[in-house]
Image 1 (cartoon, rainbow, N blue to C red):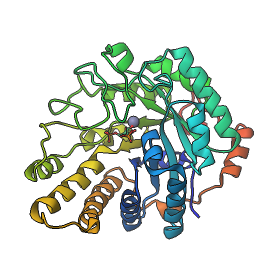
Image 2 (spheres, rainbow, N blue to C red; image 1 turned 45 degrees about the vertical axis):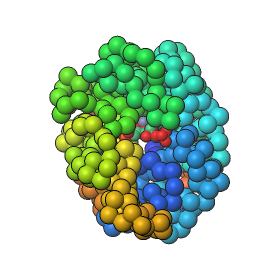
Image 3 (cartoon, protein in one colour; image 1 turned 90 degrees about the vertical axis):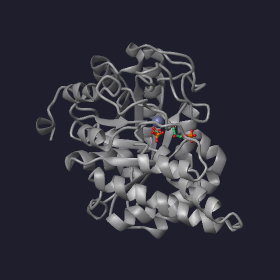
Image 4 (cartoon, protein in one colour; image 1 turned 180 degrees about the vertical axis):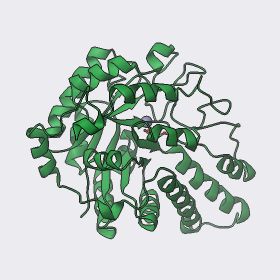
Length: 361
Ligand code: G3H
Ligand code: 13P
Ligand code: ZN
């Protein structure tokens, strides 16, 4: 079965200059939609579950769901990733339930609300890296706090996200500190803050460089050309999905997400993992609203969950194509976590800092 670690998948993506969308799941319908899209275009997959998703779906259900998806699609490498782990225990139990990768989000304290200081972030991330690498799992860290440069506010998802207002010093990752962070923690991938936030309400206008600071990605990539960068809050919040929801009784105020062209620009500068949840939530909600509005007598969940899956599959497929992920699944030979553990122990996977990509190879 084709379970893959984040590190192996992103190393491949970097070698071939593509990005991989990381789609959040909470249930079977979302899992099937992602896999059908991946199968249609031969794309490797990152599926991620938040703490909220694990609580909602149950760890045992999720574990068997991922096993089932891997058995159905043995030719598609699947990375199962913990999204926004808040402490060591969340990350350890994710690995226990079959995840091949974890995010230790030490930008916030364990309550998921309080911005943490740099020392705390380094220490907790390093502790998770040591534990995960012993068993071959990958670790994503985060430096800088996700939130809007327009308002200084974070968008809370299921209790995760800071409260109050922050300044640009905390909302933008410092490139020099990023070098120190990767060196000190040995993370496999680095999530950075540059103006994106979770949820649908990211920008009050089509974003420009003042509110979506893509130049920060470019500066970090220059200093860390061998580090895989991660963009959170990267739903594009497409106008057509907003329109469908509102046409069928929804009340979403006009909003803007991260344009796909900006993500593509990021992929040219080291972005390898792109987190997307909201677009899929919106696609499913629009399709369900349409069925409810057009067939108010309908009460068989399959009659609205099937269109919801169709709508989500279309979004996933589009992102696989837009990020260049399509066509690579069959070319990857996933290594078991035990083999990755040996590579870490041998020092083969330590971050290459201050070396250009070519010189590093
Ligand atoms: O981290 C953000 C994702 O959209 C997950 O959201 O915590 O509501 O599952 P959630
Ligand atoms: P969106 O809310 O933009 O989809 O971001 C999801 C995310 O970053 C999950 O970690
Ligand atoms: Zn996120």
